[in-house]
Image 1 (cartoon, each protein chain N blue to C red):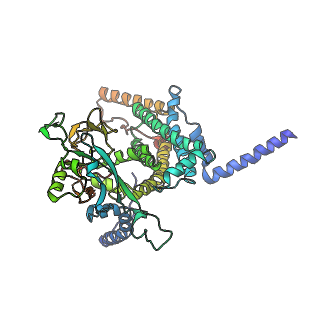
Image 2: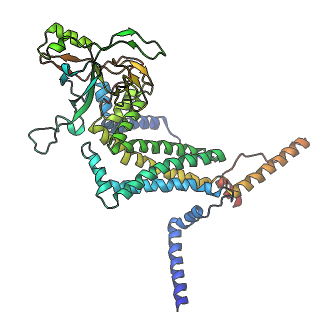
Image 3: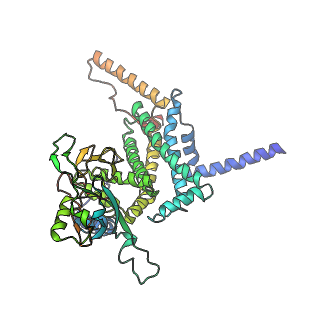
Length: 273
Length: 235
Protein backbone atom coordinates (compact mmCIF):
# COMPACT_ATOMS: atom_id res chain seq x y z
CA UNK A 1 0.00 0.00 0.00
CA UNK A 2 2.63 2.51 1.13
CA UNK A 3 4.90 1.39 -1.65
CA UNK A 4 2.18 2.04 -4.21
CA UNK A 5 1.52 5.54 -2.84
CA UNK A 6 5.21 6.23 -2.98
CA UNK A 7 5.45 5.14 -6.60
CA UNK A 8 2.38 7.15 -7.54
CA UNK A 9 3.72 10.28 -5.82
CA UNK A 10 7.04 9.87 -7.55
CA UNK A 11 5.29 9.47 -10.88
CA UNK A 12 3.08 12.50 -10.27
CA UNK A 13 6.04 14.69 -9.26
CA UNK A 14 7.99 13.44 -12.28
CA UNK A 15 5.06 14.50 -14.49
CA UNK A 16 5.13 17.97 -12.87
CA UNK A 17 8.90 18.30 -13.31
CA UNK A 18 8.67 17.20 -16.94
CA UNK A 19 5.83 19.63 -17.57
CA UNK A 20 7.85 22.55 -16.14
CA UNK A 21 10.99 21.49 -17.94
CA UNK A 22 9.20 21.26 -21.24
CA UNK A 23 7.75 24.76 -20.92
CA UNK A 24 10.47 26.73 -19.10
CA UNK A 25 13.66 24.67 -19.12
CA UNK A 26 14.00 25.55 -15.46
CA UNK A 27 15.09 22.06 -14.37
CA UNK A 28 18.14 22.06 -16.63
CA UNK A 29 18.88 25.58 -15.45
CA UNK A 30 18.73 24.51 -11.81
CA UNK A 31 20.91 21.52 -12.66
CA UNK A 32 23.52 23.88 -14.08
CA UNK A 33 23.35 26.05 -10.97
CA UNK A 34 23.41 23.25 -8.42
CA UNK A 35 25.80 20.75 -10.01
CA UNK A 36 28.46 23.07 -11.40
CA UNK A 37 31.72 21.11 -11.48
CA UNK A 38 34.43 23.06 -9.68
CA UNK A 39 37.95 22.00 -8.68
CA UNK A 40 38.14 20.28 -5.30
CA UNK A 41 40.91 22.60 -4.16
CA UNK A 42 39.50 26.00 -3.10
CA UNK A 43 35.94 24.98 -3.85
CA UNK A 44 34.67 27.24 -1.05
CA UNK A 45 35.98 30.29 -2.90
CA UNK A 46 33.41 29.60 -5.60
CA UNK A 47 30.61 30.32 -3.11
CA UNK A 48 31.59 34.00 -2.75
CA UNK A 49 29.48 35.07 -5.72
CA UNK A 50 26.49 33.25 -4.25
CA UNK A 51 27.17 34.96 -0.91
CA UNK A 52 26.95 38.33 -2.64
CA UNK A 53 23.72 37.31 -4.36
CA UNK A 54 22.30 36.10 -1.05
CA UNK A 55 23.11 39.29 0.88
CA UNK A 56 21.80 41.51 -1.91
CA UNK A 57 18.56 39.50 -1.92
CA UNK A 58 18.33 40.10 1.81
CA UNK A 59 18.76 43.82 1.12
CA UNK A 60 15.84 43.80 -1.30
CA UNK A 61 13.57 41.83 1.04
CA UNK A 62 14.30 43.72 4.28
CA UNK A 63 14.31 47.03 2.39
CA UNK A 64 10.79 46.36 1.16
CA UNK A 65 9.73 45.58 4.74
CA UNK A 66 11.34 48.74 6.15
CA UNK A 67 9.37 50.83 3.65
CA UNK A 68 6.16 49.86 5.45
CA UNK A 69 7.12 52.17 8.33
CA UNK A 70 9.85 54.52 7.12
CA UNK A 71 8.81 58.11 6.33
CA UNK A 72 11.19 60.07 4.08
CA UNK A 73 10.66 63.58 5.43
CA UNK A 74 13.05 65.67 7.50
CA UNK A 75 10.65 65.97 10.43
CA UNK A 76 9.63 62.30 10.57
CA UNK A 77 12.53 60.24 9.22
CA UNK A 78 14.37 59.84 12.52
CA UNK A 79 11.14 59.21 14.42
CA UNK A 80 10.03 56.51 12.02
CA UNK A 81 13.40 54.75 12.29
CA UNK A 82 13.08 55.01 16.05
CA UNK A 83 9.59 53.48 15.77
CA UNK A 84 10.97 50.60 13.71
CA UNK A 85 13.68 50.01 16.29
CA UNK A 86 11.57 50.30 19.42
CA UNK A 87 7.90 49.64 18.71
CA UNK A 88 7.45 47.55 15.56
CA UNK A 89 7.51 43.79 16.20
CA UNK A 90 10.88 42.38 15.15
CA UNK A 91 11.80 45.86 13.89
CA UNK A 92 15.29 45.53 15.34
CA UNK A 93 15.75 42.21 13.55
CA UNK A 94 14.53 43.48 10.18
CA UNK A 95 16.55 46.68 10.31
CA UNK A 96 19.50 44.82 11.83
CA UNK A 97 19.52 42.39 8.90
CA UNK A 98 19.32 45.32 6.46
CA UNK A 99 22.20 47.06 8.23
CA UNK A 100 24.49 44.07 8.77
CA UNK A 101 23.89 42.39 5.44
CA UNK A 102 24.75 45.73 3.81
CA UNK A 103 28.06 45.68 5.66
CA UNK A 104 28.73 42.04 4.80
CA UNK A 105 27.68 42.71 1.20
CA UNK A 106 30.58 45.13 0.77
CA UNK A 107 32.98 42.62 2.33
CA UNK A 108 31.71 39.77 0.14
CA UNK A 109 31.98 41.91 -2.98
CA UNK A 110 35.58 42.68 -2.09
CA UNK A 111 36.40 39.00 -1.56
CA UNK A 112 34.51 37.97 -4.71
CA UNK A 113 36.43 40.52 -6.78
CA UNK A 114 39.68 39.39 -5.23
CA UNK A 115 38.95 35.75 -6.05
CA UNK A 116 38.06 36.57 -9.65
CA UNK A 117 41.08 38.83 -10.03
CA UNK A 118 43.72 36.52 -8.55
CA UNK A 119 42.39 33.41 -10.31
CA UNK A 120 42.33 35.28 -13.63
CA UNK A 121 38.61 34.64 -14.02
CA UNK A 122 38.15 37.95 -15.85
CA UNK A 123 40.09 36.78 -18.91
CA UNK A 124 38.60 35.99 -22.31
CA UNK A 125 35.82 35.22 -22.96
CA UNK A 126 34.59 36.60 -19.61
CA UNK A 127 35.76 40.25 -19.85
CA UNK A 128 32.24 41.64 -20.13
CA UNK A 129 31.18 39.85 -16.98
CA UNK A 130 33.97 41.65 -15.13
CA UNK A 131 32.77 44.96 -16.58
CA UNK A 132 29.19 44.27 -15.50
CA UNK A 133 30.51 43.31 -12.07
CA UNK A 134 32.38 46.58 -11.70
CA UNK A 135 29.23 48.55 -12.64
CA UNK A 136 27.36 46.53 -10.01
CA UNK A 137 30.05 47.41 -7.47
CA UNK A 138 29.65 51.14 -8.21
CA UNK A 139 25.85 50.87 -7.90
CA UNK A 140 26.16 49.09 -4.55
CA UNK A 141 28.51 51.82 -3.32
CA UNK A 142 25.88 54.36 -4.39
CA UNK A 143 23.27 52.43 -2.44
CA UNK A 144 25.47 52.34 0.65
CA UNK A 145 26.08 56.09 0.38
CA UNK A 146 22.43 57.09 -0.11
CA UNK A 147 21.15 54.70 2.54
CA UNK A 148 23.28 56.33 5.20
CA UNK A 149 21.43 59.67 5.04
CA UNK A 150 17.96 58.14 5.32
CA UNK A 151 18.38 57.57 9.08
CA UNK A 152 18.61 61.37 9.42
CA UNK A 153 20.67 61.13 12.60
CA UNK A 154 23.87 63.06 13.31
CA UNK A 155 26.06 60.20 12.12
CA UNK A 156 24.37 59.63 8.77
CA UNK A 157 23.74 63.34 8.21
CA UNK A 158 27.34 64.46 8.58
CA UNK A 159 28.74 61.45 6.76
CA UNK A 160 26.51 62.37 3.81
CA UNK A 161 27.52 66.04 4.03
CA UNK A 162 31.16 65.00 3.88
CA UNK A 163 30.44 62.62 1.00
CA UNK A 164 28.63 65.28 -0.99
CA UNK A 165 31.40 67.82 -0.40
CA UNK A 166 33.94 65.27 -1.58
CA UNK A 167 31.91 65.29 -4.81
CA UNK A 168 32.25 69.09 -4.90
CA UNK A 169 36.01 68.71 -5.38
CA UNK A 170 35.56 66.82 -8.65
CA UNK A 171 36.91 68.82 -11.59
CA UNK A 172 34.53 70.92 -13.73
CA UNK A 173 31.29 69.26 -12.59
CA UNK A 174 31.77 69.55 -8.81
CA UNK A 175 29.09 72.18 -8.28
CA UNK A 176 26.60 70.37 -10.49
CA UNK A 177 27.16 67.08 -8.68
CA UNK A 178 26.52 68.68 -5.31
CA UNK A 179 23.47 70.61 -6.47
CA UNK A 180 22.07 67.44 -8.00
CA UNK A 181 22.52 65.48 -4.78
CA UNK A 182 21.31 68.30 -2.53
CA UNK A 183 18.29 69.01 -4.71
CA UNK A 184 19.10 72.72 -4.39
CA UNK A 185 21.92 74.69 -2.84
CA UNK A 186 21.45 73.75 0.80
CA UNK A 187 20.81 70.56 2.72
CA UNK A 188 17.12 70.25 3.41
CA UNK A 189 13.88 68.42 2.64
CA UNK A 190 14.80 68.05 -1.03
CA UNK A 191 18.06 66.29 -0.14
CA UNK A 192 16.31 63.59 1.87
CA UNK A 193 13.66 63.08 -0.83
CA UNK A 194 16.34 62.67 -3.50
CA UNK A 195 18.41 60.25 -1.52
CA UNK A 196 15.26 58.27 -0.77
CA UNK A 197 14.30 58.14 -4.45
CA UNK A 198 17.82 57.13 -5.47
CA UNK A 199 18.11 54.54 -2.70
CA UNK A 200 14.80 52.75 -3.03
CA UNK A 201 14.04 53.05 -6.73
CA UNK A 202 16.74 54.33 -9.06
CA UNK A 203 19.66 52.17 -7.96
CA UNK A 204 17.73 48.96 -7.17
CA UNK A 205 15.97 49.23 -10.53
CA UNK A 206 19.37 49.60 -12.19
CA UNK A 207 20.96 46.84 -10.17
CA UNK A 208 18.34 44.14 -10.77
CA UNK A 209 18.74 43.74 -14.57
CA UNK A 210 22.51 43.97 -14.23
CA UNK A 211 22.46 41.09 -11.75
CA UNK A 212 20.47 39.21 -14.38
CA UNK A 213 23.09 40.03 -17.02
CA UNK A 214 25.87 38.98 -14.63
CA UNK A 215 24.21 35.61 -14.05
CA UNK A 216 23.40 35.13 -17.74
CA UNK A 217 27.02 35.74 -18.72
CA UNK A 218 28.13 33.40 -15.96
CA UNK A 219 25.87 30.65 -17.33
CA UNK A 220 26.96 31.30 -20.89
CA UNK A 221 30.63 30.72 -20.19
CA UNK A 222 30.44 28.60 -17.07
CA UNK A 223 32.32 29.19 -13.84
CA UNK A 224 35.96 29.90 -14.53
CA UNK A 225 38.31 27.17 -13.39
CA UNK A 226 35.88 24.31 -13.86
CA UNK A 227 37.78 21.04 -14.31
CA UNK A 228 36.57 20.26 -17.78
CA UNK A 229 37.76 23.65 -18.91
CA UNK A 230 41.26 22.96 -17.68
CA UNK A 231 41.43 19.59 -19.42
CA UNK A 232 39.98 21.14 -22.55
CA UNK A 233 42.50 23.94 -22.56
CA UNK A 234 45.40 21.66 -21.75
CA UNK A 235 44.48 19.37 -24.64
CA UNK A 236 44.28 22.40 -26.91
CA UNK A 237 47.65 23.67 -25.70
CA UNK A 238 49.33 20.33 -26.27
CA UNK A 239 47.80 20.09 -29.73
CA UNK A 240 49.13 23.54 -30.58
CA UNK A 241 52.60 22.72 -29.25
CA UNK A 242 52.60 19.55 -31.30
CA UNK A 243 51.63 21.43 -34.45
CA UNK A 244 54.27 24.07 -33.83
CA UNK A 245 56.81 21.35 -33.35
CA UNK A 246 55.85 19.79 -36.68
CA UNK A 247 55.92 23.17 -38.39
CA UNK A 248 59.42 23.71 -37.12
CA UNK A 249 60.65 20.29 -38.20
CA UNK A 250 58.91 20.01 -41.53
CA UNK A 251 59.21 22.55 -44.28
CA UNK A 252 56.12 21.50 -46.15
CA UNK A 253 53.44 23.97 -47.16
CA UNK A 254 50.83 22.21 -45.09
CA UNK A 255 50.99 23.88 -41.70
CA UNK A 256 48.25 21.86 -40.10
CA UNK A 257 45.12 23.15 -38.43
CA UNK A 258 45.46 26.85 -37.59
CA UNK A 259 45.05 27.90 -33.96
CA UNK A 260 41.60 29.50 -33.54
CA UNK A 261 42.14 31.20 -30.21
CA UNK A 262 40.54 30.56 -26.86
CA UNK A 263 37.14 29.04 -27.06
CA UNK A 264 34.14 29.32 -24.79
CA UNK A 265 31.49 26.87 -23.74
CA UNK A 266 29.35 27.52 -26.84
CA UNK A 267 32.24 26.44 -29.08
CA UNK A 268 32.93 23.34 -27.05
CA UNK A 269 29.33 22.29 -27.16
CA UNK A 270 29.19 22.77 -30.91
CA UNK A 271 32.24 20.54 -31.27
CA UNK A 272 30.63 17.88 -29.13
CA UNK A 273 27.61 17.85 -31.37
CA UNK B 1 30.31 35.77 -37.85
CA UNK B 2 27.02 37.30 -36.75
CA UNK B 3 24.99 39.64 -38.88
CA UNK B 4 22.65 42.18 -37.38
CA UNK B 5 21.57 44.27 -40.37
CA UNK B 6 19.77 41.98 -42.83
CA UNK B 7 18.17 44.60 -45.12
CA UNK B 8 20.28 47.25 -46.79
CA UNK B 9 19.43 50.74 -45.48
CA UNK B 10 18.75 53.48 -48.04
CA UNK B 11 19.75 57.13 -47.71
CA UNK B 12 16.18 58.31 -47.23
CA UNK B 13 15.63 55.60 -44.61
CA UNK B 14 18.72 56.82 -42.77
CA UNK B 15 17.55 60.45 -42.94
CA UNK B 16 14.08 59.48 -41.74
CA UNK B 17 15.47 57.51 -38.85
CA UNK B 18 17.74 60.42 -37.93
CA UNK B 19 15.03 63.09 -37.99
CA UNK B 20 12.38 60.96 -36.32
CA UNK B 21 14.90 59.68 -33.81
CA UNK B 22 15.92 63.23 -32.86
CA UNK B 23 12.31 64.39 -32.44
CA UNK B 24 11.17 61.30 -30.54
CA UNK B 25 14.32 61.30 -28.45
CA UNK B 26 13.83 64.94 -27.47
CA UNK B 27 10.17 64.39 -26.57
CA UNK B 28 11.03 61.36 -24.49
CA UNK B 29 14.15 62.61 -22.71
CA UNK B 30 13.83 66.36 -22.14
CA UNK B 31 10.91 66.33 -19.65
CA UNK B 32 12.28 63.64 -17.30
CA UNK B 33 15.84 64.98 -17.44
CA UNK B 34 14.73 68.56 -16.72
CA UNK B 35 12.47 67.23 -13.97
CA UNK B 36 15.32 65.45 -12.20
CA UNK B 37 17.92 68.15 -12.87
CA UNK B 38 15.72 71.12 -11.92
CA UNK B 39 17.88 71.95 -8.85
CA UNK B 40 20.91 72.27 -11.14
CA UNK B 41 18.98 74.44 -13.58
CA UNK B 42 17.73 76.64 -10.75
CA UNK B 43 20.98 77.09 -8.85
CA UNK B 44 23.63 76.87 -11.57
CA UNK B 45 21.89 78.24 -14.65
CA UNK B 46 19.37 80.69 -13.21
CA UNK B 47 21.45 81.46 -10.12
CA UNK B 48 18.57 81.15 -7.68
CA UNK B 49 19.01 80.06 -4.09
CA UNK B 50 16.78 78.01 -1.82
CA UNK B 51 17.96 79.97 1.18
CA UNK B 52 16.25 83.25 2.01
CA UNK B 53 18.35 86.32 1.16
CA UNK B 54 17.08 88.57 3.99
CA UNK B 55 18.80 89.71 7.19
CA UNK B 56 18.72 87.36 10.16
CA UNK B 57 19.36 88.46 13.73
CA UNK B 58 22.33 86.75 15.40
CA UNK B 59 23.00 88.22 18.86
CA UNK B 60 24.00 91.32 20.75
CA UNK B 61 27.67 92.07 20.03
CA UNK B 62 28.22 92.96 23.69
CA UNK B 63 27.67 89.28 24.50
CA UNK B 64 30.85 88.28 22.70
CA UNK B 65 33.52 87.73 25.38
CA UNK B 66 37.05 89.08 25.29
CA UNK B 67 39.20 85.99 24.73
CA UNK B 68 37.03 83.14 23.54
CA UNK B 69 34.64 82.92 20.60
CA UNK B 70 30.92 82.50 21.25
CA UNK B 71 28.58 80.59 18.98
CA UNK B 72 24.99 81.41 18.12
CA UNK B 73 22.45 79.41 16.14
CA UNK B 74 20.50 81.20 13.45
CA UNK B 75 17.79 80.03 11.10
CA UNK B 76 17.45 81.09 7.48
CA UNK B 77 14.13 80.53 5.73
CA UNK B 78 14.51 77.58 3.36
CA UNK B 79 12.41 76.88 0.29
CA UNK B 80 12.68 73.28 -0.84
CA UNK B 81 10.05 70.77 -1.96
CA UNK B 82 7.44 70.96 0.77
CA UNK B 83 8.79 74.20 2.19
CA UNK B 84 8.04 76.47 -0.78
CA UNK B 85 5.81 79.52 -0.89
CA UNK B 86 3.23 77.75 -3.00
CA UNK B 87 2.96 74.94 -0.48
CA UNK B 88 3.00 77.15 2.60
CA UNK B 89 -0.31 78.77 1.75
CA UNK B 90 -1.70 80.20 4.99
CA UNK B 91 -5.25 79.88 3.65
CA UNK B 92 -4.98 76.12 3.49
CA UNK B 93 -5.21 74.50 6.87
CA UNK B 94 -3.35 71.38 5.85
CA UNK B 95 -0.30 73.30 4.62
CA UNK B 96 2.84 72.57 6.58
CA UNK B 97 4.73 74.98 8.78
CA UNK B 98 7.90 76.73 7.60
CA UNK B 99 11.19 74.94 7.08
CA UNK B 100 14.45 76.58 7.99
CA UNK B 101 18.14 76.06 7.44
CA UNK B 102 19.91 76.03 10.80
CA UNK B 103 23.37 77.58 10.77
CA UNK B 104 25.79 78.36 13.53
CA UNK B 105 27.86 81.53 13.70
CA UNK B 106 31.10 81.87 15.64
CA UNK B 107 31.66 85.43 16.86
CA UNK B 108 34.99 86.59 18.26
CA UNK B 109 37.18 89.67 18.38
CA UNK B 110 39.99 89.87 15.88
CA UNK B 111 43.47 89.12 17.09
CA UNK B 112 46.08 91.26 15.28
CA UNK B 113 48.24 89.31 12.85
CA UNK B 114 51.86 89.89 13.79
CA UNK B 115 53.33 87.80 10.99
CA UNK B 116 51.28 86.29 8.17
CA UNK B 117 51.71 82.55 7.70
CA UNK B 118 53.38 81.25 4.58
CA UNK B 119 52.90 78.12 2.51
CA UNK B 120 53.55 75.07 4.66
CA UNK B 121 53.74 77.05 7.90
CA UNK B 122 51.51 76.66 10.92
CA UNK B 123 49.40 79.69 10.08
CA UNK B 124 49.60 83.32 11.16
CA UNK B 125 51.38 84.40 14.29
CA UNK B 126 48.74 86.36 16.17
CA UNK B 127 48.47 88.48 19.28
CA UNK B 128 45.66 88.86 21.82
CA UNK B 129 42.08 89.43 20.66
CA UNK B 130 41.05 93.09 20.93
CA UNK B 131 37.58 93.90 22.21
CA UNK B 132 36.40 97.43 21.40
CA UNK B 133 36.46 99.60 24.52
CA UNK B 134 33.02 101.12 23.78
CA UNK B 135 31.35 97.84 24.65
CA UNK B 136 32.38 98.23 28.31
CA UNK B 137 30.31 101.43 28.46
CA UNK B 138 27.22 100.60 26.42
CA UNK B 139 25.67 97.63 24.61
CA UNK B 140 23.31 99.50 22.26
CA UNK B 141 22.66 102.84 20.63
CA UNK B 142 26.00 102.96 18.82
CA UNK B 143 26.89 105.84 16.52
CA UNK B 144 27.93 105.19 12.92
CA UNK B 145 31.65 105.44 13.67
CA UNK B 146 31.31 103.12 16.66
CA UNK B 147 29.46 100.58 14.53
CA UNK B 148 32.21 100.79 11.94
CA UNK B 149 34.83 100.15 14.62
CA UNK B 150 32.94 97.17 16.01
CA UNK B 151 32.52 95.61 12.58
CA UNK B 152 36.20 96.10 11.77
CA UNK B 153 37.16 94.18 14.91
CA UNK B 154 34.56 91.43 14.79
CA UNK B 155 35.10 87.98 13.29
CA UNK B 156 31.81 86.66 11.86
CA UNK B 157 32.62 83.07 10.95
CA UNK B 158 30.54 80.17 9.71
CA UNK B 159 30.97 76.95 11.69
CA UNK B 160 31.18 74.94 8.45
CA UNK B 161 34.67 73.55 7.96
CA UNK B 162 36.22 74.66 4.66
CA UNK B 163 37.35 71.09 4.00
CA UNK B 164 34.18 68.99 3.87
CA UNK B 165 31.58 70.97 5.80
CA UNK B 166 31.58 69.42 9.26
CA UNK B 167 30.81 71.78 12.16
CA UNK B 168 33.94 73.15 13.85
CA UNK B 169 34.26 73.66 17.59
CA UNK B 170 36.45 75.95 19.72
CA UNK B 171 39.00 74.08 21.82
CA UNK B 172 39.76 76.44 24.69
CA UNK B 173 42.85 74.52 25.88
CA UNK B 174 44.52 74.73 22.45
CA UNK B 175 43.02 78.14 21.54
CA UNK B 176 42.05 76.74 18.13
CA UNK B 177 38.97 75.74 16.17
CA UNK B 178 38.96 71.99 15.55
CA UNK B 179 36.95 70.11 12.95
CA UNK B 180 35.86 66.74 14.34
CA UNK B 181 35.80 64.95 10.97
CA UNK B 182 39.37 65.19 9.65
CA UNK B 183 41.16 67.42 12.15
CA UNK B 184 41.18 70.78 10.36
CA UNK B 185 42.56 73.53 12.64
CA UNK B 186 41.91 77.28 12.52
CA UNK B 187 42.97 80.17 14.75
CA UNK B 188 40.60 82.63 16.41
CA UNK B 189 40.45 84.75 13.22
CA UNK B 190 39.40 81.69 11.22
CA UNK B 191 42.79 81.51 9.53
CA UNK B 192 44.13 78.14 8.47
CA UNK B 193 46.51 76.57 10.97
CA UNK B 194 46.69 72.88 10.10
CA UNK B 195 44.94 69.88 8.63
CA UNK B 196 43.32 69.25 5.24
CA UNK B 197 41.23 72.45 4.69
CA UNK B 198 42.42 74.29 1.56
CA UNK B 199 41.67 77.72 3.07
CA UNK B 200 40.51 79.52 6.21
CA UNK B 201 36.99 79.38 7.63
CA UNK B 202 34.13 80.97 5.70
CA UNK B 203 33.27 84.51 6.76
CA UNK B 204 29.84 86.06 6.48
CA UNK B 205 30.38 88.88 3.97
CA UNK B 206 27.03 90.55 4.67
CA UNK B 207 27.01 91.42 8.38
CA UNK B 208 26.07 94.61 10.18
CA UNK B 209 25.55 95.91 13.69
CA UNK B 210 22.39 97.95 14.11
CA UNK B 211 21.34 100.64 16.56
CA UNK B 212 19.92 98.05 18.96
CA UNK B 213 23.43 96.61 19.36
CA UNK B 214 22.56 93.38 17.59
CA UNK B 215 24.38 91.74 14.73
CA UNK B 216 22.51 90.81 11.55
CA UNK B 217 23.81 88.59 8.77
CA UNK B 218 22.80 87.37 5.34
CA UNK B 219 23.49 83.94 3.85
CA UNK B 220 26.61 85.08 1.97
CA UNK B 221 30.20 83.95 2.34
CA UNK B 222 33.64 84.91 1.10
CA UNK B 223 34.07 82.45 -1.73
CA UNK B 224 36.78 83.29 -4.19
CA UNK B 225 36.63 82.02 -7.73
CA UNK B 226 39.16 79.41 -8.70
CA UNK B 227 40.79 76.80 -6.53
CA UNK B 228 39.22 77.98 -3.29
CA UNK B 229 35.72 77.71 -4.68
CA UNK B 230 34.38 74.99 -2.43
CA UNK B 231 31.14 76.56 -1.47
CA UNK B 232 29.57 76.15 1.93
CA UNK B 233 26.73 74.06 0.55
CA UNK B 234 26.04 72.86 4.02
CA UNK B 235 26.60 75.24 6.87
